[in-house]
Image (cartoon, rainbow, N blue to C red; front, side, top):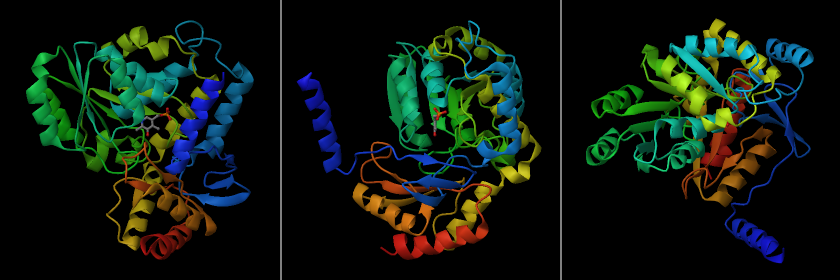
Length: 384
Ligand SMILES: *Cc1c(COP(=O)(O)O)cnc(C)c1O
């Protein structure tokens, strides 16, 4: 066993040297915006709970009621006995919000991408992925065992070039991008990408993990700027603005039925706890009912970028590029000393040399605190 331990220790030493070693910090929240961490109470600008719905009384009450009635776990895969009737309600709401025929809920967003992509693309296929896409999109693409190519971030001409050169050698092709980029906060040109996909007989899937609940009146990035782009495949997560847990795909009835039959992460993984399904369902009701509330995170982010002269925020996510991993950690520490939590994001989550503070704005951040954060960022981060 010596070699195993040595292997692990050497790997860790190497990460330490490059300032890339990570630690799990005990953190908990007793409301939507404050985090207890390392003995400090910090105002969080790092949570993806954009609407603070994880602590909404209606959401908690729905979860508690389902927990008491149906127990803590679901007991089996959805295809066996884990398919609680609450799922059908949740999926109907997702399909209604996204204007698709149907939806299917997975155990998480990661499981959704790892399951969906290999159902659509096989050994003879082509997966064309925006280079800044989330790790689980690449994980799903790799599981296809087909050809995986990346196109430069939001670069339609590069995507087209790759399709022209490679599409014909493959039986099927899937383009995957994020609706809102998780570490950069910018939006994908979904309309243009969808047209490009159609021209080249490819399918487009958007990962709307950071769009649902906060963009397009809460309906997500395919509804951004008052337009609706009818994408054939829209996946996302219930763990961010929805405040619960789980992943989903919205698509045509046939595609969804195929997923229920073939997506391995759905078939071979236990269904979500009923309380989580109930929480997500209650949260979607709030999102559908309160588009003005859903607009708040982007408003706060735009307020912040105006005060700091950063590029105008397009989503609740605002990156502040630092460069080196060590410098990013020091910048985060300076903010923590002022009472703000802004967890530094380092490689390999982001490309080498682009370590950053990734700020996320939520509906309930008080304007006065956003103003104070802007001042501290101007003086203690941007001026450094
Ligand atoms: C968070 C995230 C996921 C994973 O979703 P989970 O439900 O947390 O597993 C997938 N894609 C993107 C773009 C994400 O930001």
